[in-house]
Structures are given as structure tokens and as C-alpha cells.
Length: 340
Ligand code: HEM
Image (cartoon, rainbow, N blue to C red; front, side, top):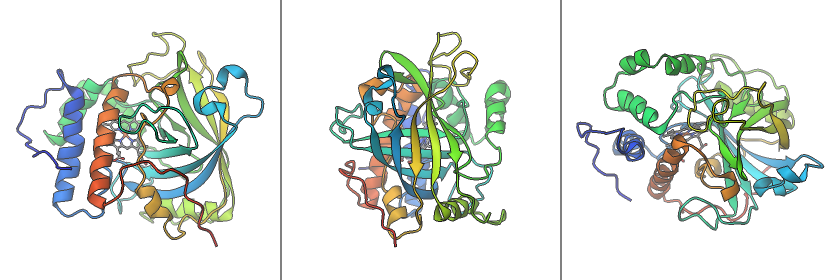
């Protein structure tokens, strides 16, 4: 695995091939210089600050109607590992950062959509604590990223795109806990022959002693304290598309209104009481990779941003695992909880 030489003066044409340009900017131009500067272990390009890795169960709602029992929802109960993270650098304060969750579900037979990964027994779900994404399409994402990575100045882009600017401002909201915030997929996924967006909503969370707000690793400390106290639960919900105007598939800044289409709970994510600092748990989660395309055809990621994520995430994870000496393959079985 080699990095192609990053040449910031080479034209990055977002109109003709935004996916290739995004791959170059996220992998060659973001991960590349960090690796060349000695980053060890090599980390993800984004969401590189982990708050905690936790074992969970993904339990389908009892009596789920037949029409919802497709793909992963056709199972009664699945084991899962979760990675909570923020889109900032390790060591930086995290209370106002974009917070995300990667969910790896185990025990899912059937061909997966990720090239080279077709026979993995896992499926991934990725959500972040904002209901919309800050740009509409892969081309927009490419132009936005180019403003930062190549021009080192987002201002002209943000002036010309006030909706992006507004969403990014909203994304700087305070996050009190990884276990009380809601998470959304932002982008749509197939649900058989229709489309849905995903949401996770906290139902119950143990209340530990709040960590000091001056702690740069506040979210990690909070997660650790709460899960030491007891079990946390989230509803896993889906929101069905209605029509292209109200629930567009390739305009990620548009909120799908709950008045047009309410969320429906299909499953519960149960995070049992555990010590997230148990030996090996952090390293296990850091070495996993989550990719929206590691899923079944019935849950195919939709829209141009999803298309871009396929290539970018896979290239990033392959490079990271290669440099860290970790097998690229998906795990065959979930790690057992190592608890006293
Ligand atoms: C074109 C748009 C996007 C690009 C280029 C992009 C890029 C990336 C990359 C390179 C990674 C690291 C992958 C790895 O090395 O394993 C990542 C992780 C992540 N992204 Fe995105 N992303 C995009 C859109 C989104 C959206 C719409 C969401 C909303 C849910 C999202 C949420 C996340 C999360 C939660 C992670 C962390 C996953 C983990 O724990 O490993 N991203 N993204």
C-alpha cells in the first residue's frame, strides 16, 4: 500500500470526478502528511478522536410487522461493537465537536456491497449527532473540502453557501454525553424497494458523577463513568421517504420532516454495563473499520455522497490497517467482553 504523491498544485476537478478528488484529499493529502510526520499508530482521516469502544446488543422490536423484517431486521437479536468518536484530533477539547457512532453488527449472512468484503459476516451503521449533512452532493463535498485542504480558506465557500455555513454552526452544539445525544444517518439508505434515514435516540442512560468540563477528554470520561454505573439504551428508528420533493435522495442538507414521515422504532440498542477501559477494548475498536457499504443490497447506501464514501473509507481503512500491521479482513466473530 503506497500513498500517491500529494501534489497540492495539481488541479482537483470536482466537476468531472469528485470521488477521485475526495479520495485524494482525504487519504493522500490528509492522512499522507500525518503518516510522513510519524503518526503512530496511523489513525482515521476524520473522527479520529475515540471516546470509547463498547459491546452492545441490537434487539429487534418484539412482534415487528413482516414488512419491516428485511435484511438485518429479519434477525431477532444481533451482537454489536460500537465506536463513539468525535471529528477532532485526539487531545483536543471535545464538548462542542461533531460526535459519531460506528455500529458493527455481527452474524449477518448474505453478500455485502463492499468490494473485496462480499462474504463478511458483519454489517455497519454510521451515524452522527446532526440530522442533516452540511453539503448536498459529492461535488459540493469536493468543493468544500478543496477550499480547506487545498486553498486553506473556507470563507469564500461558506459565503457563497449560507446553508452549509448555518449547518456547520449548528453542529458546534454542546454534547453533554455520548449516551444522551441523538444520532442520525443524515443520508438515505434503501429499505428493500423504498428508502429510509436512520436515527438513534437515547431511551435511558445511567448517570455517573459528571466529569470536569475542563477535561479535554470530557466525553470519554463521561462514557466511562456512566457505563461503569449501568446499562444504556437507544431506540433505533427509521424514517421512510415520501417523494423526491419532500424527502430527496441526493440533497443531504434537506431535513426530512417528521410531519411528512414520522420515525418508526425497529430495534433497541442495548449497551450493557461495562468498563470501557478494560485491557484491549480500545485497541480492538481502533483497529476496526466501519463502512456504510459493508451491508446488504436491501440496505444499499443512496445518493452521490454515499457513492463517494465507498471509495474514500475503503482506501483510508486499507492504508491505516496496512501501516498498523493489522489484517484488512472483517472480524469473523465479535470479541468477548473482557470484564473483571
Ligand atoms: C463525502 C462525504 C464523506 C467523506 C469523504 C467522509 C470521510 C470519512 C473518512 C475518510 C472516515 C474514516 C474511515 C476509516 O478510516 O475507517 C470517516 C469516518 C466517519 N464518518 Fe465520514 N465521511 C463523509 C460523510 C459522512 C456522513 C454523511 C456521516 C454521517 C453519518 C459520516 C460519519 C462518519 C463517522 C461516524 C465516522 C467514524 C467511523 C468510525 O468510528 O470508524 N461521514 N468519514
